[in-house]
Image 1: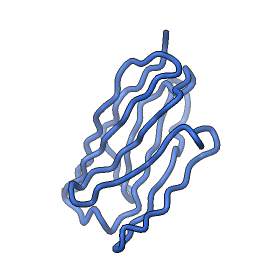
Image 2 (image 1 turned 180 degrees about the horizontal axis):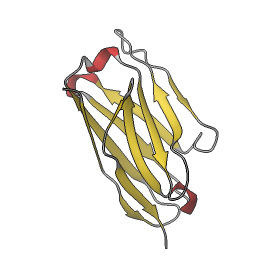
Image 3 (image 1 turned 45 degrees about the horizontal axis):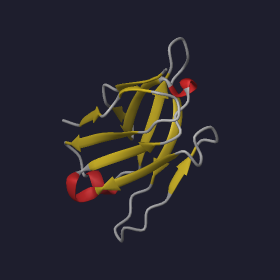
Length: 115
């Protein structure tokens, strides 16, 4: 069955960095556009960004405005892994981060930005 497992979350100070990973299994990873979402306490889940599939490695990543220039999505199809590099983190980035493929998502990883 489809499985997505996120990791890499933790506690970081404002201005710091974290890199999240998401390993996929049970589906043809390289053919899927992959997405990152997040859900802060008391708020709805929101889209963070996406990266397209590509047979040539010519991926296209798009981001929501509030992370543009700070977050970078990448993927390694040989490892069936999606990444989210987060820099210049802010307290408002605190949330559970989820990866997604089509209708599927993982269990999430907690990111807390606090001094």
